[in-house]
Length: 361
Image 1 (cartoon, rainbow, N blue to C red):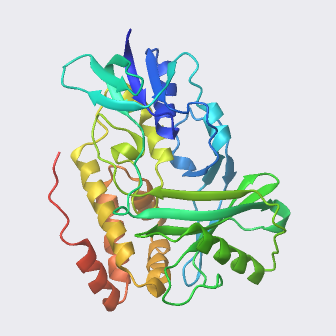
Image 2: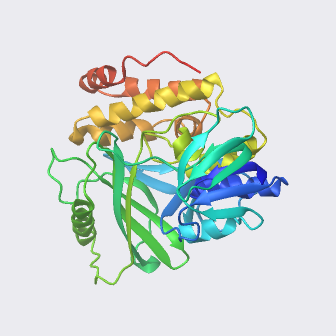
C-alpha cells in the first residue's frame, strides 16, 4: 500500500508531522523502532513560537529571570512541556505505525519513494521525510544537563539561565548554568546545563555542580528526587525538503532548541511548502557561527557574552532565538552583541565566526 506520507521517526518532530498530516486528511505511515516509548525529557518553548493548534498541556511562566554577571528579566512568556504530556497531545491514531528500523531511503524514483526496513520489508509513499534526529559523534558539539525535580515550595524563581559561579567550578573550568522552570503547579525542575561543549561536560560533573549550587542556596536534597539527564548533539542536521526536525537542521545550534520550530513548521511541510528559503539558509549559517563563537570564548567570559545578549531589545532576542528565516533580525542581534563586548572578546569572536561560507541552496 502506497500512502501519501511516510515519516521515519516518531520523536517530537516526526510525531508532530504525523499528527498534522492526519489532521489535514492525508494517509500516513510512521516507522519507529520504539513507537510506544514514553518521552521523559522536558521541553521548553517561547509561547509566541507555538502554533494555535498545540494543545494547552504545558505550564506557562509569564516572566523569566536570567543571570550573566547581573540579573535580567525577560519579558516573554515561556511554556514548559513534560515530555509525556506533549507526546499524548500529538495523537497519531489513524496512522499506520510500523515498529522497525529504517535501513535505507530510496528517492531515485520520482514517485513513489521507498523505505527498506531491517526486517527486509519495503514500504512506499508519495513522500518520505526523515525525522530520526542526529546521531551522537565525538566530532559534534553536545548539550548535556543533569536535573532534579523538587517541590515548588522549595524554589520560587523561574530562571532561563543563571551563570553565577556558585556551583563549585573553577574559574578556568568549562562553564555551566542553572535552568529552573515549573513543571506543574507543585513541582520545579532544577537543571545544571552545559550549553554546548566539544566534548561536553559529563553528567556526573553536572550533578556535583548542581548539588553544590543548591547547597549554597540553602537546599539540601534527600536523594529521592526524580532525576532528568540530557545529552544530545547540537550540530549535524542538514536542511532540506527530505528531512525534518533536528535531522533537517531545525535545531538551534547555539541553544539546543528545536521542538517549537518543528511544531510551528509542521503544517507547511505537510502542505509541501519549502521551509528553507534563502533567508532561512542564511540564518542557519549565522547560528552555526554563533555556536563557534560560544565554543571559542574563554569560560570566565561567558557571563559577559550573555550580559550583552540579555541587554538586547526583546525583539532582537526573539529574532536570534526564534527567527528561523529572519536574517535581518538575527544579523542585527549578533552585531549588537559583538559591539557590546570588550575588544579582547571581539577578536576571539571575529576569528571564530569568519569566514561564514557562501550561501548554497
